[in-house]
Image (cartoon, rainbow, N blue to C red):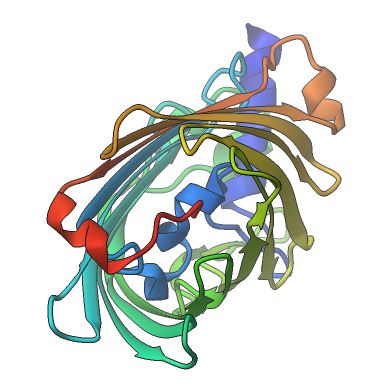
Length: 321
């Protein structure tokens, strides 16, 4: 337990108090292909009906205080217009609440027809996040310098406004999107040292850029195949590329695998339980040294989507995204 706590404390410092040359990244998702509005506001309304989606992710299960993320999205087109709207809530925490951020955003999109079957959407989201940071939870080592480092007041419900932009193109078979969900690089706090032995820390939200794309191939009357890629770029952090390949059988059951470049491999399954309800599950296994530790049992995701209004279904053809 002592080893776990020491490792956890070091992990917290790495994630929260990184030097200014480094950066935090937004929450990550394995089932990004079904959770698109969390990374691109232009997706709002693109399914042609009122759609609600929830995702729960537990990362590094077995590691005490590993990251846990919950998302909730609700979006719909506005009838007889080119507009779509939605709301997005993301709750991300590390260390059983030691570090917790909650994002609240309102989303608006505008869609134009650019070809017989192609649509181009522009999205805007506006809102902000609440930050809670419990420094007492970091005091798990006897090292004197460590205690001095975290000797500061807790942060409670600190609100930081933000906004984001996105563009999204899709047909019935193909989609591609580019977005920056949070454009403001908020500095949460800056603790400057008072002597030569103290350490200066800056917790800063960096701008993340996302590129997402995928294509659906009809293999036969029962099988569809969809490869997809999500690329995330943020200053001061390694490039993240997620590759996925999913098969859809009889428009009811999907299964596949994913690979996060130099980080993890994943298995994905999904069930269209009814015309309105879809359930998705994913499991990640780290390919880094962390994945080989005895206290890390991988990461799990559960995704649930509920289409609320059947009457909107006539507006679009059924899609695998």
